[in-house]
Image (cartoon, rainbow, N blue to C red; front, side, top):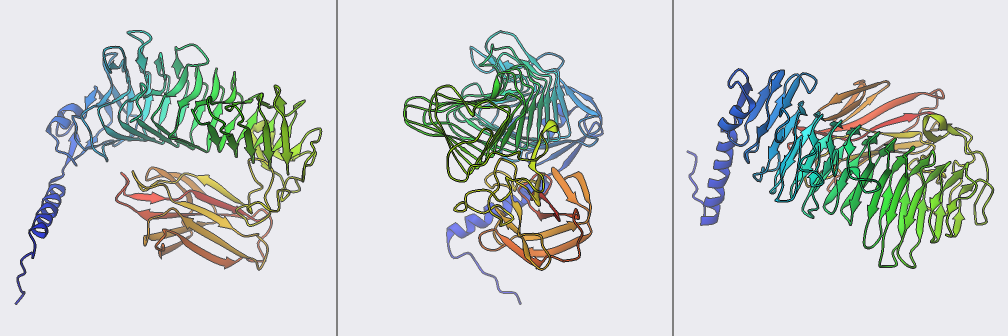
Length: 544
């Protein structure tokens, strides 16, 4: 006989009832097919309950309003064959009723939007209009051909308006959109807005606001996260952001008619991990007033005349760490301090009256200071924008002996792009809101008999991991990221520790020839992502 237990406290009974209700709601979630069950997506949304999934067959459909519901709406054939067209009136997608986390659009093209009123003075959001606390994620979508022109200067976000809301785009394309502010995306000056782009392409958008203010992505205040995103060939600057809450990683700015990136902060502004490969007004403009704060550029490439314009507050300095300048300079009337920096093909490192102090750097024409050299850095292919260091470069292992070692545990290299035997290929999928993406790095010198290792960090504690190793690359789109290795070896049921980390070590074989490469990546089952999986960046390792 199974004994019957009653909850000892009323709170336990309430918790049990809530859990059962939640499970019951999950069980009632249904899949709705368009046009098989309903002829239009909006009719399907009207009939759906939160947590339902709407699968949309290839075809042309009209604009939609998500009505505050947590839904997954997916084009089964992908964005190339599934189009939502607003027909030049209103927004293509409206999320303005506090849509909850997990509300997701996948595999759709959004076009023909003209936006809607934000308040009495402004309108916007041709492709996506997010307001009033909405949460919305778009994956593998195309937002193109949306024009927010009337009523004139008060139009924001031709492609995406993110106002008092949170919008995330993964592996999306935003192109050919127009507005007065933020041809691609804007937030209409709201500190509560949060816009994230990962693995996206932002090209060919038009911002009508005159330069230098007009920018494809215009985010005054609010949070802005850009990773592994190309921002190129836009009319206007690439990105404009004010104050704080900004993160840039692995982005490329090229061919924009204004600046690549512009930022203003009361206590200084910084730029990390980006490449500026030729923008009409310059690469990055960092401006700060009122306090004596330093400004930083770290792990960045500036080339083709893309200057770094830096204006710290009184007494502040510009600090460069692991940056590469090829035919580009720092423009500043303040002190510039360089460490692990390469400066080539310019008459002087600094334009203006600012002083230049360098250590452990490669400066054409020479510069006083410990560890400085003047030599051809032997970039892999500068003409093609590849500023990695060739074998035999004088910049390899030439850094500060007191500094942190490079990821391969060798002394630090000079410049933004190290001589990498362990190459970070990107392409990961994060765990969802509230948790960053997992990171895989390789460590160790690739010589026969040496100990080398793979280190996984930023994962969830005590999480089961599958590590994939392949002797060739697949490089295919998978679960919202990129599956890099061929499936040659699968190490299943590996487990992260209490800090969400995992380290695997082995001896490097002596018989591998120079130029041999293999690819590796870690994947997790995860309920926090729309596709049910999270994955690290891919890592390629090549024997020197």
